[in-house]
Amino acid sequence: MADRARGGSHRAAWAVAGLAATAAGGAVWSTVLERQWYALRRITVPVLRPGSWPIRVLHLSDLHILPRHHRKMQWVSALADLRPDLVVNTGDTLSSTDAVPSALRAFGGLLEVPGAFVFGNNDYFAPQWKSPHRYFTRSKPLPKRGTLPWRDLRAAQSERGWIDLSNRKSPLELRGQRIALAGVDDPHLGRDRYEEIAGPADASAVVRIGVAHSPEPRVLDAFAGDGYDLVLAGHTHGGQVRLPLLGPVVTNCGIDRSRARGLSRWGESMWLNVSAGLGNSPYMPARFCCRPEATLITLVPREPGDAPMPARPGRSAEVSGAPLQIR
Image 1 (cartoon, rainbow, N blue to C red):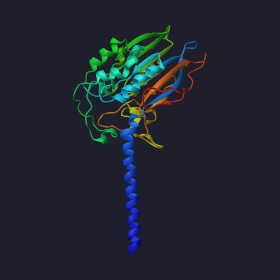
Image 2 (image 1 turned 45 degrees about the horizontal axis):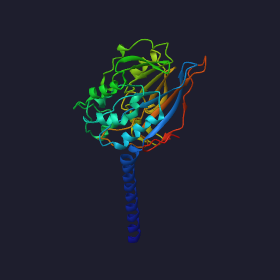
Image 3 (image 1 turned 180 degrees about the vertical axis):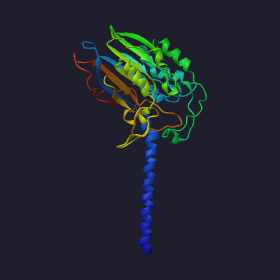
Image 4 (image 1 turned 45 degrees about the vertical axis):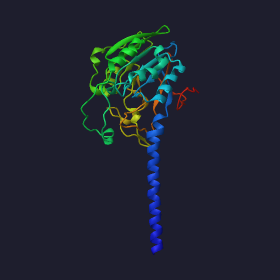
């Protein structure tokens, strides 16, 4: 009986040790490896007016960059090799008061490409430590402390020709094709003023693109009601923690969990692409089953007389560092 008891005790000890090792391995994977395993997601969306030339849009979001993020800077700057027609940055670029030079190093040659941007909550206010449970519950928001140099970031992007779409509309000509762009300031902080851009989207444009940091339903409904073809957003980090079969635990905004990452339909005629982003809060340095990403979106014409068709996912060129290997 004593031997049997000792055997059972040993098996229990091994089981506990196995669980501990699994937990430790998961922690290392999510906090050290996966959060730096950058991926390029490719999608094709048929939203252009028939007869238009394809347009390639590089969607960046949620860099949350710090001066020590040399690997991220190298990876993002290598995206210039994709030669996109347009770059759209949907915010949360900064994570510290000294991060603007790092952001510019990350953008690199992309600043030579036509671009547009909006700001996110973590461009305005410094990240704060908070209990991890707050990431997965609807806890009351903490008071905002510590402003970040968002004006410097705005000036740096604007000086290179990128368009600030914070509660603004702006047309853009790309290779002789007119694109209608419109954006709102960060809805997560309540800085959106859609009434300043409200009204039917430009019918003369080959495509009408809306831009926001947080994909709040009230903003998406407004863009859809005004006839926009596509909205680009970020903020969710794709959920940041995604569980097998269940998907993301939270979205950190008003959209449902099924839309926390990637392309989906919003209403009858508008597409929504939510980027899982390239970073995370320095106080929550983990991703699980949710690789950091940028998205290359190829906009192509609809067939004459056809309603918008389902998007076609492309191959993913998923890489973990620079130089960028495009498959």
